[in-house]
Image (tube, rainbow, N blue to C red):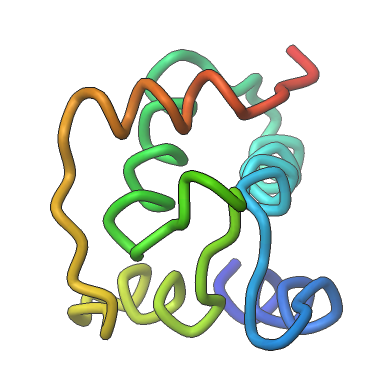
Length: 98
């Protein structure tokens, strides 16, 4: 689903940034496509993607290109350190339908 996700992110991006909530909505979209409900693992993965891609925990935004670098197995330019506190903060700010 990478091409479709990239197109959606392109439409949502402002100044090259997307929000944590944009990532949540894309994860929910993928789950719908394969007929599953996002569980705790999906929520943790989304927070990890956000933080590892250099997500700004104050603004809750992240560089669109860094997200897709990481999704493609490449190191993001924003080489962020992941900590449990950062993951928890991101997870606390994400709003999931299910």
